[in-house]
Image (cartoon, rainbow, N blue to C red; front, side, top):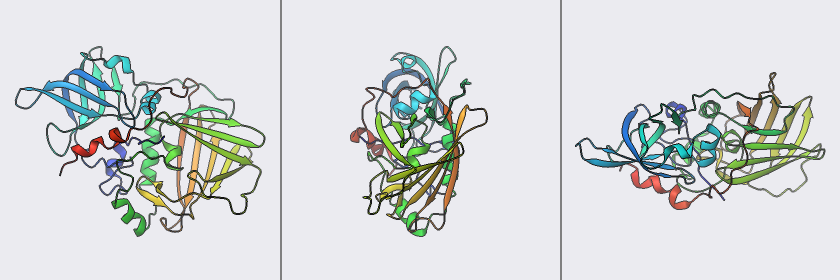
Length: 336
């Protein structure tokens, strides 16, 4: 039921990366400072999780026919960003912009976007440049999804978090690389995928559609954390209202290899406080989180993000769970 997530170009320059990226695997094999243009026709689009792959028939530097494999985002990320699967059928002529592999020609590339003959730009890791018209929300209840730019901004904030030397050392070990694993908040909460909020008198239920794998968080309202609560992946959450702002306090997290950020672990002492408020125009939700961890953070770490109101989105069906073989696929392309 677990899967990987995507990263963004913002992360390439982030100090926290130290050779890895905010994804379940390192993006260090791609040269994020360069963009190469590959023209050809679609040989195959593999609509798979945790990443999809587009194989393009083209010509190599020697002029001979060649196949180039490009890595893309997860399925639900693609749906949020508006990628049209039907527009990339085999035989379709395309121009693919991609970050090249540091290992040279012939190795897997990282797709930014693909342009078809009609001039339409189909987003992969690059954000969708088409203007999306949002509709106002009546309350926090509803369907929400951060845009790709909001994801990049959140990752940029994470890159500046006060991670301890122990956290940096653990990050360098890339413990979460190339595995299918679900992340707890804050990573869970900032991904550019669908999440829904249902508000009741006694509890608030948040569901996350993470590349076809659903995660449910239950927030117990106007309650206290029970004594001896058992640790779990997503912890124990209680909530309260401060005016129109929902405040969520969560403790009792299990240690996790990406509990603070991707490849930055968390300890049993991790504590989060999240605040959700509608923006003045009611088109977005302002999400703010503060994370504390006595082992892996030298002090409180915070970030803010906006989630777009997306009533047009529904939980994806039949997208397929994270496939461990697909998850580890990129390893074969890492330059040695």
